[in-house]
Image 1 (cartoon, rainbow, N blue to C red):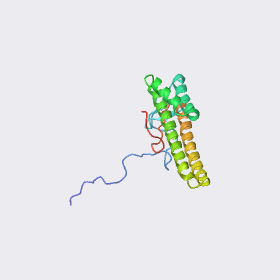
Image 2: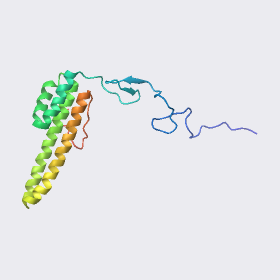
Image 3: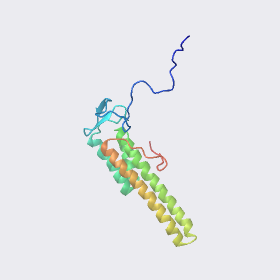
Image 4: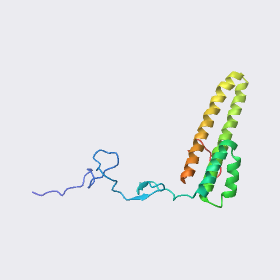
Length: 171
């Protein structure tokens, strides 16, 4: 009688692996090594990598670019992009993002004006009922992403705006 050697099957991998939030996780601290992040927060090594802490002298102009884009449109972020693009990649990235967001919002506003003009051929009421809510939704969406950009610049992080809302004009 001959015995067959055991073939490794599709069974579980050797050694227990416990993920966070799964039943059966061992209590206690995370066994993976961690590194310290700004603010005393530690992050497991397997997570996404973040840039080192950006000095306040770099973060303030980046935040100002987003803030200026909210109130003044794409002009100030464009000037900041053209002036600071060779100084710091952090400033350049955030100035380009603020410029792209504000210019895209301006183009969406132009589209709303065209839509309102076409609907005005029918009646003033139809033009106002359709164009004002569309313009308000677009403006609030742009405002949300500009405010998120301010927060990311303050934390010294990059913030990628979804491509469906923002055209990438300046890089």
